[in-house]
Amino acid sequence: MYHQIYNPLGNAFLSTIAAAIPILTLLYFIALHRHRDSQGNVHLGISAPYAAFFGVVAAFIISCLVFRMPVVSAVSAFALGTLSGFLGIIWIVLAAMFLYTMSVVSGKFEIVKESIVHISFDRRLQCVLIAFSFGAIIEGTSGFGTPVAIAGAVMVGLGFRPFQAAVLNLLANTAPVAWGAIGTPIVTLAAVSGLDQVTLSAMAGRQLPFVSVLVPFWLVATFVKMEGGTWKQVFEVWPAMLCAGLSFALMQFFASGSSALHLMTDVVSGVFSVICTALFLRFVWHPKTRFLLRSEREALERAGKSATSTTDKNEWKYPYTTGETIYAWMPWVILIACCALWGVPEFKKLLNNLFADITFSTTFLGSKFAGTLSLPVWDMPALNNLVQRMPPVAPVDAKAETAKFTINWLSTAGTGVFVAALLSGFILKLRPAQWKDAFVQTMRRMKIPVLVIGQVLGLGFLTRYSGTDAVLGLAFTHAGFLYPFFAAYLGWLGVFLTGSDTASNALFGSLQRITAQQLNLNPILIVATNSTGGVMGKMIDAQSIMVACAACYDSPKERSFALGPIFRTVFFHSIAGAAVIGIIAMLQAYVFPGVIPVPR
Image 1 (cartoon, helix red, strand yellow):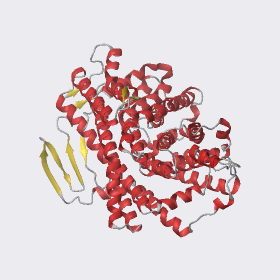
Image 2 (cartoon, rainbow, N blue to C red):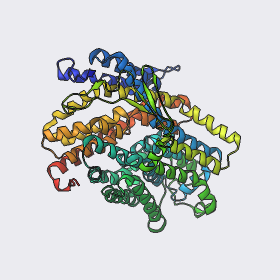
Image 3 (cartoon, rainbow, N blue to C red):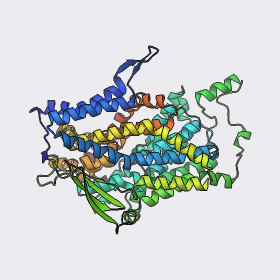
Image 4 (tube, one colour):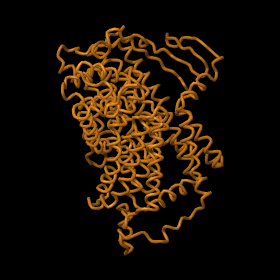
């Protein structure tokens, strides 16, 4: 049995620094290491696979030498993270990119692009509709990086630069994350903290709507500044930004506290926002002048036309019929439907029990590997029930940590996305050559991201089972009166380490409740803040950034080196976003405690 040690060096400060070394190593090589290319140009950051590798090496050294975790257990923890990451994240993104690529090779994506453009020719509003509203729907159905991949690919297809599309979608994929994949983060948070699920959801729904109103403004300001625009051009479209954000926020508030809808909060909020914004732009208001990409403005100026002129009437003529548009959108409709179906607990249970009559039991690498054909389970060797979390991170009577690789190959969300991709291919009537082309393009595009995501997820699991994550978390618990503010940063840290709000809630949900009770704070507020603060860490975790790179960049070399520049761009946005949640939590803890819902 490995009992986690939270002060291995006998000094809390030094132990915390040691625990942070793997993360600091990863960050250094991603964003700060200076190197020269073959032309002698200086760049910051190295290739993503190498940066991840150096972070993994540092994690093994610290875990085994400083925290004295057995080497074989450390290897097992890393393997569990990599395997779980493939089934839980990589499989989803692979299938989503396969669907997107099929839409492109079939030619139907051109119709999808035109239908979006004709909602608004203004690029500012396209950012809001695609990255924020449409992305929230995808987040609500599948989560785990899928909205960044899908919405990012759509924006690149519309002409946005890859770097730009990646950054904007990472910024947008914040407010909806707490209810991603049919509310999985909230369900997990309730399970590990022992608090009521609907009450925690309602509490999150009284924090994140403030951010939801802010995000469209945030997106447009970032985009306009990227394109060399002015603050005047940012606020020219404030009515539409307010409509998109406010409609989303209001539905988010009401759905999150509903027993019937709380797990579908993102889906209903995203759909409501898209409908309200589209109708508002069609019948109520539209900007007098349009804002275009820098490249488009320069082309117009070369042609002697005004880059800020009103849209020509001829441009509003839509070239496709309603039937053609519906047909082109069918893959995305099928994707949402399949993801929603795979998110229903009863359907998951049905799939997990589909081959319940076919059972087996054997050993693999000296550990039990058994279960049914539809739900095999491998007890990780030298790890399962052999790691013990200690107080104050866990209660005195806490059970040993389980470490099982559950191969839910039928019920995992990735299989739902893959089924949607297959159905889409048949509906689009792809020829054999197009099927092959879509498959080859997807594999080439995902080669580097898969390597990076697998390593980073392995690193995250290694920090979890070695206890270094707990040491970093404990550093936040000494904040005293300011703890509600830093509770948001604890969730933020968890998402950065694991790449998932769900995993962050599993990691720190119990610690947040214990700390809240010790400081006489409302546990509902503090535990929920772990999830709402965590959403701001989503934009800087390496997995999400690599998913964005995979979706937005065609060149393997650009994809490998884009991680650092994107990280440096979104990092301070992430810090500021977590601070906003922290301030909201502070106000709710000490100024407006009446907004905290009463447990059911």
